[in-house]
Image (tube, rainbow, N blue to C red; front, top):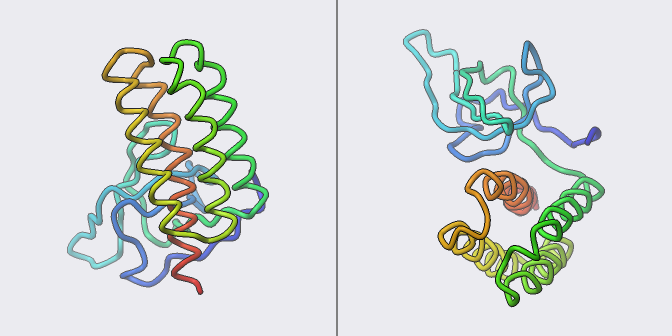
Length: 166
């Protein structure tokens, strides 16, 4: 998913918990993740604890991180990927959930395209709630749900990021 528009996180206050970031240097270059904590030490050089999308948690200097901002094509790809993942397990879900989740992913995508934060929040809450119910009722594994949540978090961060840029 190359081509992301990135904003360098060089200001001390740029990154906060749950920001989506891309590592721009070192061993984890090009990997995406989210900020878990600011762990700046006594030398005041910003360091953050980052949970990479693969599940590994690492400590990285703020200078090696950039805020993630997906292009419209990347947003579209992420929604298609989420729909494909849901379609693959739809038969394991209760009938209503198996048909409604893909529909609500479409509504979420529409909200992203239109920039409708309220509608996006409603759809995001609905989808994450249904996923939690699917895990609770053992229709899907927690691990599968976590991979879906990463994609949803990317879309949520993108919506939030774009709202702060206007």
